Length: 97
Image (cartoon, rainbow, N blue to C red; front, side, top):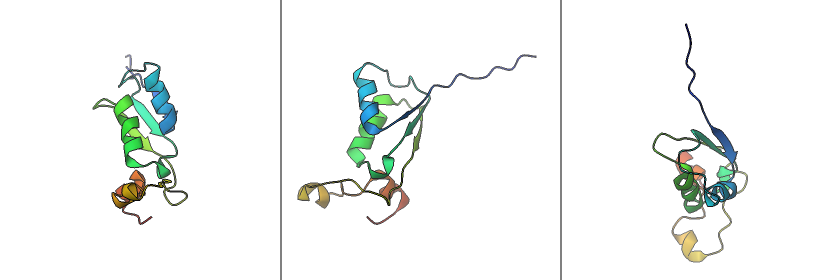
């Protein structure tokens, strides 16, 4: 018999490249799997923009990076007060900056 293998579209991006893909018209859901590199230091709004621009409910995401290597570089005291100096990965893993 014939075995049907589902087609997967996989992309490895940084948050910046994900924004560029969205900017040139790549539709949300085009990729079945999105691997986000350098996510260890991505602040939450940046990472959420990445997800929102490329995702549908059935899109799989993998966050890759070392949250202990370099955190988000946030200069605004107000942003720091609201936790934006903690990367998404740090927050999800329960790590202290």
